[in-house]
Length: 152
Image (cartoon, rainbow, N blue to C red):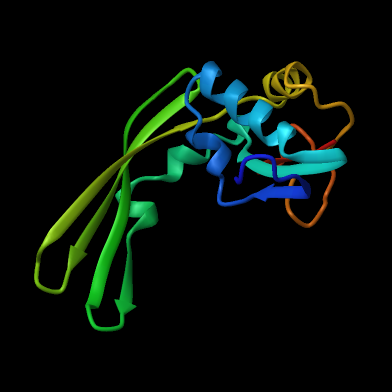
């Protein structure tokens, strides 16, 4: 974000909030985002609901797919969990190209509870927050697949 620039609304999608792996990074992100909002501005983002344990299906048998990529041909893609403990899940994404070349990337995501997330928002100076269970604006429940917050 440009220094001094302020926005009515900032939206983070793609579960990007889950890459803030420690409390310091969460605090820094939320304070910085709040500083770039006009008074009454809104921050909207999603994170996966840890109670749903979505990562348990991130295994080759459940995630393997073949994609046809222009100029590359068929690419096989699948996920494999490396570890899951506390709020953190580490996994690999495997790519195998038509040439039989392979690429593996490693990712760690943080799965934070709604209660913990609410505490971080208050600490960062956000007041009112609306909670949804999915982008269709369904109300949040403990069984919702997502935790979507619109904070002011």
